[in-house]
Length: 429
Image (cartoon, rainbow, N blue to C red; front, side, top):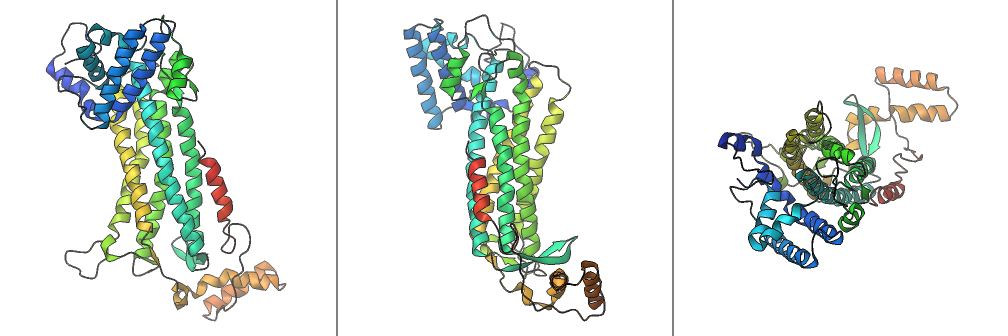
């Protein structure tokens, strides 16, 4: 097997199979980023005299050809090649001979992997940001549309106080603002340049790390070479934590939808084409999409813990354990994209029951409204509370007044414009 670390001694097939695992398949996601990082690296090598201009031009053209095969879907990591880094260098060496071997001067596979991962994760976070923004805008649109449609609020799974669909949709929109703060934090951790830290202790070459930082569009260096290597695992954990926050929001929304779709509630409805049936019960309309969103988000939530456990108990520096992080995080990124996209898709077809509170089931939803009405008329709160409680217990309670909720963040004052401003600022990265 072609490896960057081979010193003339072949590993046994058993060791190769165990240590490589499915890394080659996962590395395909990093292919374009390995080329991008290599292009910045050779530009820097030429600037400090480790490559001639002619050698740089040949390598740069060769990398462009590889990038083209990646874009067209023709790039493969060959069966006897260990990883993406080995494959790119092998292709250059086949084409350019000894010039291809010079591409690795001044870097280790350790900082090469870090650069690839950070470039990849940076793009992934931007994609998630755009998907969150799309969902946020739809939730705000629904909140505005149904701002005056009342909905029973529940605490302890018991009928509590009046809510509204505007408040419900708007709540999840604002929850996404907090999730965006977490995404922004993860992006800042990822958006720093480790290239030039080599195996974790720098290089005796006069590397221009500021140049590669500019070329790759990073916000700053990972300055300390040891700290750069410490970012392996930490970067993945920060991303997983941010994804977990979004997953928790989607999980709760999916759980609400499962409950609200139940005929015993009947608060929302989706077309038959977006639900599933039963093999024996003709009346069933199952919320399979929302159940799977809920379940997949639970898997996303577990990712941060798995990364934390995997990265603990290791001294500083590179360890092969880190290879397993891709196997944990990459599938979770795909789950996150899928859950955000299907949630947004389903909301295009949601139907709201606008007459829920006509049912006598929700008469006690207004006990607090009646208590507050009496307080406003001069009755002390504890007395008003006791009076209404007695009426409820004796079956005499009835409320036919208006609902007046005007404070910021209440049924009558959703503050959607202010929430939109928060999201605009939170997503400006």
